Image (cartoon, rainbow, N blue to C red; front, side):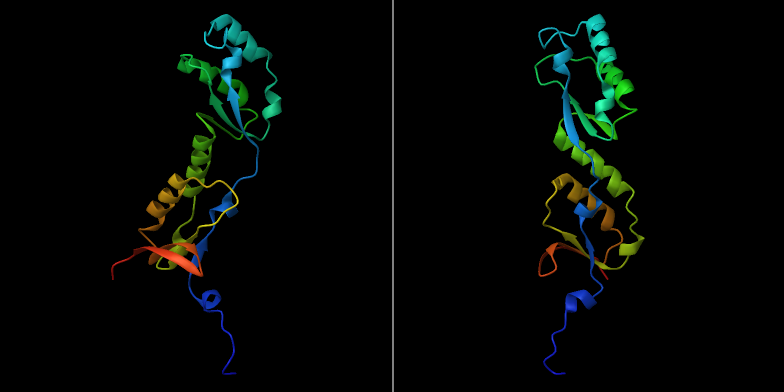
Length: 169
């Protein structure tokens, strides 16, 4: 058929990576530890330890948690470590920081475990549009991982990509 429409993208060797497909399910939350400080700024060890001991940690089952202090208090490192001893049996991941840092660390693990042999000597498109929050730092890390093996790397959608890298022949 001379007028047959052929989807060249579907029949090409292009490999698409959609990081949204790797997005792990689970609630992301920030725990503000200032609620366990005297007047929100002073850590009194005995009171702090009691608050940590009395807290219902099971409510964080299967969540991703960012520990943070939303006041200008100076928090000793052991305070976050103490909280982690209680939280780690319930949460999927714990970081000290904000939700952005939490997402970066979640995806760092995903990218470090990504099997890249599939992309060897292939043109790769990193999908640009996403309904999930994919940090730009993660995209940079993905490029670092793919560049040694990919034939080429593009960003966007198959219909309109931005070329980023092409291996030398």
